[in-house]
Picture 1 (cartoon, rainbow, N blue to C red):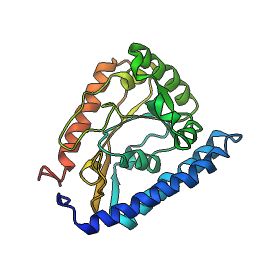
Picture 2 (tube, rainbow, N blue to C red):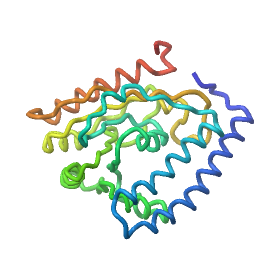
Picture 3 (tube, rainbow, N blue to C red):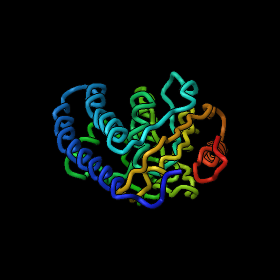
Picture 4 (tube, rainbow, N blue to C red):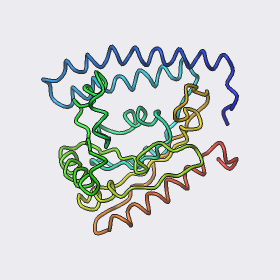
Length: 249
């Protein structure tokens, strides 16, 4: 379990990490914008170098490593990933674990100068969260097209980051996409929030565990049933690997 009382050295190491992360955004976002005339694959390759760089720098500057279990569960065909959302870390790591992908995110993120503009070039599923049921239809319409194009769809069913030991309400949108598209759902659990807590400046050294679960078939199944199975697997696995519970293996 990472220490809860940060030392001055942890503050310094975290500061060094943030400085490089900020600088890399200023450098790589404009480079990504220059790829706008090119096909998606090239745009995606350039854009995701930011995640590769910052995961490497996280290991060097903060001593924070990760390991992935269950890679053998990743299907060959484009699927929908349901991931636990505790931290910023998983938004980087999922890019290194799964094939070319798009994320479901709130439309406002695309308005952020440089970062949001670069993000738009990899064609995320940007929805209006205030649109109610229409937001689900936006997700289904755009998600079905992305899957047909061979792109994986990353969904954080809780919608927002939750603290370790907590569980948000799992939202139905990703499961509706799975029901209507027939795409396989791949559940993902991790304990990143124990090392890179939400809203935290400090990054604690250690090893994050990410577990990729067995694929969940969706043909002929209702969205509620798909969501319930994914939620049960994710939450039980998070409990198992948590360094806070004292029961991890």
